[in-house]
Length: 236
Image 1 (cartoon, helix red, strand yellow):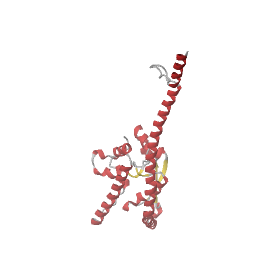
Image 2 (cartoon, one colour):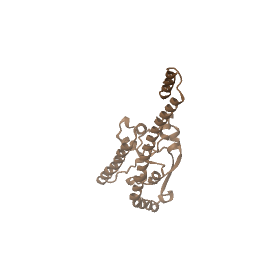
Image 3 (cartoon, helix red, strand yellow):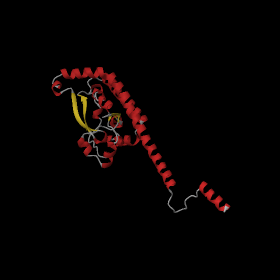
Image 4 (cartoon, one colour):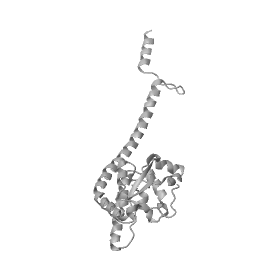
C-alpha cells in the first residue's frame, strides 16, 4: 500500500507526457494558443511600429516644411490671383486621387511649376494623413481601376507620396526605372532608411535644376508631377 501511495504521489508531481498520436491535454492546448498569440502580437507590433515611425516623420517634417515654405506659397498664390487669365481659373488645381485603403480625396495644388511649389502646396495633405512624404504616385480613380489585382492590393496598404522612388529615378531612361516597377519595388522594400534617401535625392534634384536654369535662362521648369514617361501604364 505504501508503494502504491508513493507512486501515485510521484505521478501527481510529474505528470506523464501525452503518448505520440494521442490528443494533447488542455494544458498543452493552452500553451500552444499562448505561443501563437505571442507570435501574432509580435508581428502586429512590428508593423505598427514601422507605421508609427513613418507617420511621425510625416507629421514632424511635414509641419516644419509647411512653416518654412508658407511665405513662398503665399506670394505664389497672390501672383496667380493677379495674373490673367489664371485668376479666373482659380489659384488651386483640384483633382480626385485614390489614397490609403482605396479612399478617394481631393488633391489640391497650386497652378504653378516653378521651384516645385505645386508639390510643396500639397504639404497640408501630408499633415492630414491623405499623403505621405514618400510613397507611390497618387493615381486617379480611372488609373486605379486599370491596375491588376496584385498592384491594387499593395497600393491600398500604402499612402501615396508627395515624392517617391519613381519621381527621383524615372527620368534615367533605363528599362528597369519604369515608374510602375519603381512603385512596386518601393512597396516591397520601403522603410525609414529608403524614405530618407529618397527625400535627400528629391531635394538635390531641384537644386541642381535651379542652378542649371540660372546658367541657361529660358528653359522650362518641370515638376515632379511630370515624372511619368511616354506610354506610361499603371498596370502591373
